[in-house]
Image (spheres, one colour):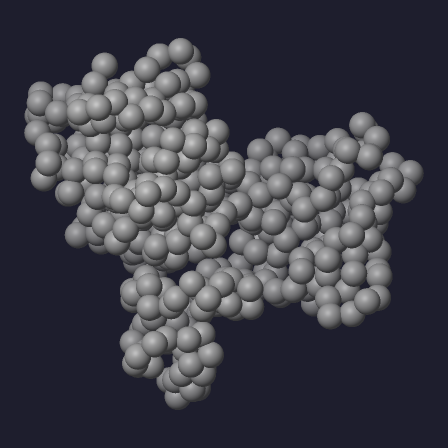
Length: 451
C-alpha cells in the first residue's frame, strides 16, 4: 500500500511527529507508523514503571505541543497528580500522557486522516520512481511512502570491553541494560554493586536500588567521575548571554560564558538563557570547533546542562557523605572473576596508577549510544544506496536546517526527513522534548504543505 507519510520509529520523536501530522493532514490522507516497540511513543526513557524515575526537565516545559505549554501540567491535574510548572514529574506519568494524548486524537475517526500502526521492523529500503521510498519489513511486507520521516532514536550503549572470557555464572551478574528492571529482583540486600557511568542513568539506577530495599555499597566508575549538578529550589530567571561576534570558537565562547556567569551570580541563569539559542550557536561552529567541543567540553556540558532535581541531589550527597556511595574516576581496563564476584581493574584518571575494586554486580550505566548508521541495518542499506550520508562527526546523518535528509551526492532528498537524535550533527540539542516537539511541528507543517 502507498501512504502519504511513513514514519519509521516508535519513540518520542515518532509520537510527536504523528500527533502533529494528525492535526495538520486532511481526512483523505494516510499515515503508517512502522515500529516493533510495544510501548509506542514511550521509548526507553518513559516506559519505566518506577515512580522514583523522574524527568530532569520541569513539567511546565514538557508539553508535546510547543504552542500549548500547560498541556502536560493540565493532564497531571486532571489525573489527580497536580504539580506546579517548575516541579519534576515522573517519567512513567509522562509516558502515560503521551499515550493518552495520541489516543484522544485518534478517537475521532471521521474527522482525521487514516493512521495505521505497523508492528514490524523496517529492514530495507528502495527508491520507487515517482512514488517515494519503499520499505521492506521483517514480516515480508512492503510499505511505500510518498513522504518519509525517520525517527530512529538511540539505544543503551554497550559495555566498553568484551566480557566473553568470564564464566557463565559470573556473566549473569553483569547487567547490560539496566532499563530492564527485572535485574533488581535478583539483588540481595547487602550485595555490593559497581555502576559503570556517572550520568543520569546512574542516578536512576541508584534510586531504583534503594527503592527496592538495597542497603549495600554502591561504587560508581566513570572516566571523569563527574555527576550531574542540581537544579535549585528557587530557580533564578534566565539571563540571555551576549555571545562573541564573527567566527565563533570554543575558546572565545567559554571565556565569554565564564565571565558572564560570574557577573550574573548563578551560572544556571546563564545556562537557561543560552538554552533556547544553543542550536544557532552550534551552527556557528565549524567542524573543527565542534570536534573540539566533543573531545574536551562535552562531559562538563552534560553535568551543567542535564541537571537533576534538588531533592534527588540531596539524597545522593547524603549517600556520598556516609560512603554508601562512592565515585571513582578512571578507565576500566579489565574485568575478571574473583570467586563468585567480579574484580574490576581501572587506571586512575590523569595517572598511570592502576586500582581495583570488587563487586557482586556490574551495571552498565554508560548512557545512551549516539545515533548513527552503524547501529541500524536499515540505515546501512539506505547509505549503500546513497539515500543518506553519515554526519562527519558521527552525530547521526546529514540533514539541512529544515531537517530534510541529504544524500551521498550532497543533494536534498525530496519528502524525506529525519527527526530527533539522528539530526544532532545539524542541531546538536535535539534529544530533549522541548527541542524535538518544535522540530516535529516544523517537519509536519512542511509535509502538510505538499499533501
